[in-house]
Length: 73
Image 1 (tube, rainbow, N blue to C red):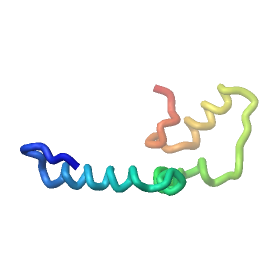
Image 2 (cartoon, helix red, strand yellow):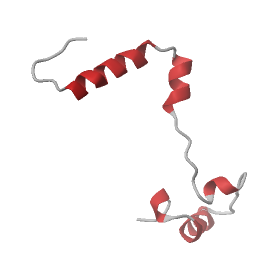
Image 3 (tube, rainbow, N blue to C red):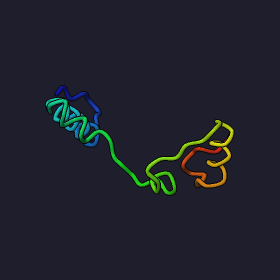
């Protein structure tokens, strides 16, 4: 690691963490790269199907919280 003048301790720590991650095998990096978080309503059923995209969008607007980002802009 090459430390530049004026780098903060935080930046040096980020470099160390990045270099350590880069040395890990790809399988391990992929396992830790994705974090599953529960999404209300979406994760509560095994699957859903809709006849049209309009039906799907209407369902999203009526059933999903705004913070999930499935509403129309």
